[in-house]
Length: 353
Ligand SMILES: Cc1cc2nc3c(=O)[nH]c(=O)nc-3n(C[C@H](O)[C@H](O)[C@H](O)COP(=O)(O)OP(=O)(O)OC[C@H]3O[C@@H](n4cnc5c(N)ncnc54)[C@H](O)[C@@H]3O)c2cc1C
Image (tube, rainbow, N blue to C red):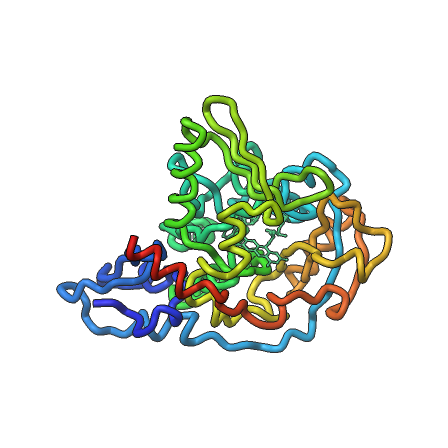
């Protein structure tokens, strides 16, 4: 039995699976390649914990009056180069690791799938750096965060807003203290299908007659920060960007392959769920003059007192300017993306062939 009536009602955060006291819920892939909760009726006791603690059902959009907004560039050029925008995340994560804490974020696994992992060493931070434009699997992260917090460790959890709220609902239900929990949500366009990404990689592997070794969605080259660079085991590379018609980027940004819930996203506004929200400061050249150098600028939303404490500790590592909502406005801070005009025809064709 599926838990959700309509697919757009589930963001796939996995809170229900982690909470189910009977372990009756498993996240299973649907035909478009996204994970959805499926109940094994043999084990289900009808306790209702899953629905009562579902962020997608219970989310409250609370006005944030504390919000501070900054444009930030890391002074360390090598960090900025290996990050998607201005490299704020790296320093945030390092701050927590230096306190003996653990950091959770999205990484590629051995099979080039994107999943959340836990790191404790600075050497592993590069695995979490950079945007991976595919929905990441949460696996056991919420349960592991709980264990870390119960061991009195600092934790930074980063992810899409739906994942950050999934974690908070989970910890809240488990009555786990969140005093040492720091969160970071990304300003999110929506998450593309892992299955389509896998097909895209398979096609490139055939074309290059070699296995994919390394993927970078945000390779910075030619004054452009949104190049996809894929390196193959035979030493060859594929480099393209949206404007050069990379097939995957195009389907992503044309809103054809996002998860159904992304088109109804509850978090596409300034009322954020993380202590800090990170994005690309798109359009900065029009709103703040002489700051953009085409190497990436982080849009940093500081949402809570914890966020303010973090900002205060990190600000001297950055060239930054305080700004306002009008200057940094982008679609994903106003409304969810609408389905692309090719959405229906693409999926019909894909699923029939
Ligand atoms: C799917 C997706 C859509 C995005 N859409 C927008 C957008 O429309 N507008 C905008 O301003 N910014 C968007 N971003 C955010 C932006 O691309 C950068 O991630 C952000 O600016 C942080 O950059 P950074 O330089 O500080 O650090 P980076 O090192 O680039 O940040 C890496 C962080 O992103 C997290 N991350 C990477 N991939 C995923 C994933 N698949 N799921 C969850 N977390 C992930 C990592 O865990 C880490 O916390 C999006 C990111 C993703 C992953």
